[in-house]
Image (cartoon, rainbow, N blue to C red; front, side, top):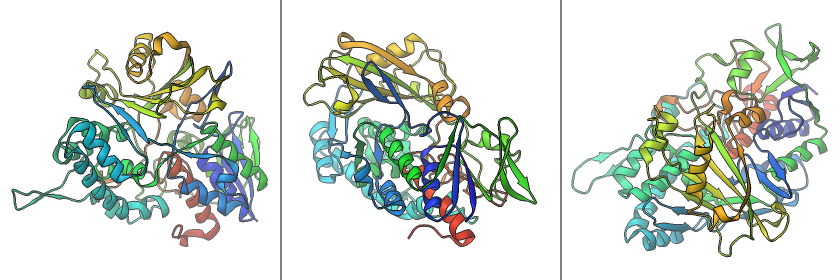
Length: 498
């Protein structure tokens, strides 16, 4: 039985802890804050409850597998999973609206044809076929296997297929997500639908590789899910599973250093200079934090390893307490698209013009009575991608509310109060400088959007969570926990889940 110290109580770290405890190891989690969950937090006020991190769960199979492997009770016995249908509603800049069914290609094609015109559905359906090809080519190395030193195929080869031209005897391969929209979808609204998936993950569609097509494909193929009571309930269930497996949690315990002895990780140093010995250390922290705990580690986890993602944006969340019950026919998720795409993208990823653009706003309105004081009120969450470290002004919030009013009837008249959660709040919850949010790992683009491997230059030291392979997002964080547990339990010969 090995002694394992885990730094941080995010979902990836807790997933690793539960699996390692089941394998017979003594696991202690050291969390600098007073609670678990990392970015998966909850804000409550006056009987209203809101998720302040992820609001939906794609690819629930990752957590189903975790609960099957760590106990007798399956995930559905610990939380109530609800398939969201329609999966999303989109309000485009020209006023066109469309609601897309959950995990139904035929239904999606029909809805797009009806809303955007004949042929729109077929172009989107054909795109999903190509996106599936990219998914099939990258699923295992990007989600289910450790990141091996020979990663040239992932970094250099674009898995999204080339598209033949009817009039020309050649094919053309899209290099970015934006080029897929321009060349293959040929409709500004379909392009906005496509690009909104990248933007929600903090990616610039103008530079994100075409392999980012797997992001909308994941939602299409595996559905969009909600956890009754909010996504915080998933973190709660994962924490309780860890406790049931005898994982020990020490909250309010800031790790100030990783102890290295005889060339390998040998424990952690806590604030106050006390040292806890360990046979393995699992760090669920951002690269800058890891480098502070053990200088030089983040810059060179392994010889030839990829660099951490740089310059990732953050999220701004506005929580709305509304008088009046949830309107009949309301949709769980609505995306209100910006009328100024270039202005928004430059404001997030480039050089702001000085005239802030109206943002793309994701509106979440769960049909969940546990989130409100009574049926005469509604809890709505607005999310916007913003530059990391950005401060927020009242005009910024007003622009977000103005956009959201296109999706929420009588929003201004119904508003009781609102709470703003900024990049600084994300930084406080997660410990990540400037509140940056990691993106899922993606193939191609020279490996720029891969995340560093879960092993490091120091034997016995592993990394877990969104800032290590396979990147950000709840499914990817869950898979990082499975990979780290496999590497510790089975050793360097571990090849991934079967």
